[in-house]
Length: 177
View 1 (cartoon, rainbow, N blue to C red):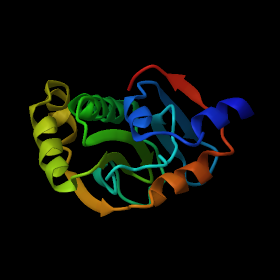
View 2 (view 1 turned 180 degrees about the vertical axis):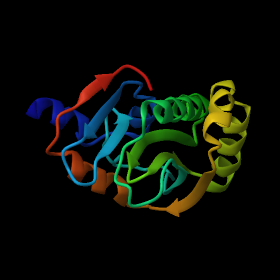
View 3 (view 1 turned 60 degrees about the horizontal axis):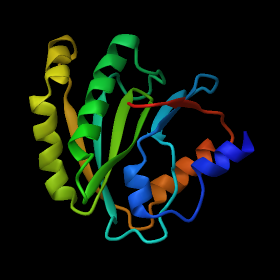
View 4 (view 1 turned 135 degrees about the vertical axis):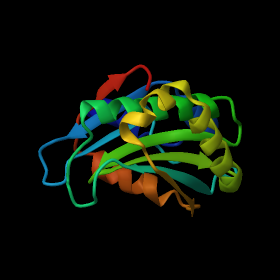
C-alpha cells in the first residue's frame, strides 16, 4: 500500500509525464460528515518545472445546494462521467492544457484543467461541452448550469492540498474516466 502511494505522489516528475499519464485513480470517502469523491491521474505530483502551467480552470456544476454534504446520485454520476470524458478527450492532445482531476463534494462537481492559458481554455471547455452528444443526451434530465473560474496558482497549492488529504486513503484504479 505504501509503495502505491509513493508512486502516486512521487517526485520529481515532468509536466509531460503528468499530462501523458492515461491511468486514472478514484477514491470515495463515505465515512466523514462531508463525503467526497476524487478521480485523478495515477500520478498526482507537482512537476519540478511547471513550464508555464501557473493556473487552472475550475469547471463546476452544482448538482445540489451547498451544505447538503452528499455525493452525486447514480444518474448525476452519468452526467459527471460524460463531462469528464468530454474534457479529457478535448485536452488529450493539447500541449498547453490537460484535465488533472475531478472532485465531487458538498453538492458540487468540479473539474480542474491545468493550463498555460485559462482564458482560451474557458472558451474551449464551453465549446466542447456544448457539442458533446453524451452531455446533451443528459441535459434535459438535469438542466445543468456550468460555471467556470480562472485561477492563478503558480505553486499548485490545490494539488498540495489534495495530496495532504489523500495520503491516508486507499485507492481504486480505473483505466479511464
